[in-house]
Image (cartoon, rainbow, N blue to C red; front, side):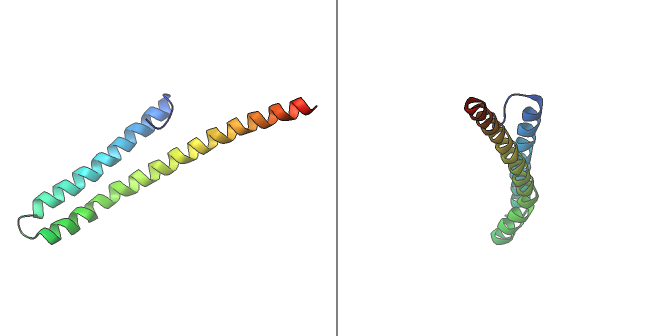
Length: 88
């Protein structure tokens, strides 16, 4: 689990798992449907069919990274405000 245990974190982690499952299912089904005729074409089609799932994984990971960056910036802002209050 990459995000905290709130509702949004659960949904994002669930969608990340679904995206990885779609990568695996897409690659496996296209590979196993074509490997008897030509192994080269089977590998190419498996790679092509995994691309949409990989794009979904990248988008979700980008969202997670942005949320983690926001949380870190909030912590830094609180620390800077404490330092500013100490100086006054």
